[in-house]
Image (cartoon, rainbow, N blue to C red):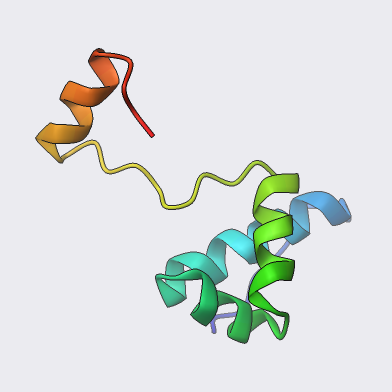
Length: 74
């Protein structure tokens, strides 16, 4: 994993950034949890606590745009 440089010493922002980077790198919760050295359940709790959108929405998919406009988005 690449080195991250933090803007400040805010622990919650650092935790959120690490989780987002791990999820992006791994592409799934199990892999991201392994990168972070925590269980998948611990990562799920952090995703909820830190309000991380996972899986990320893909606005380029037409079905998501249609569902979002109809109020049916995930």
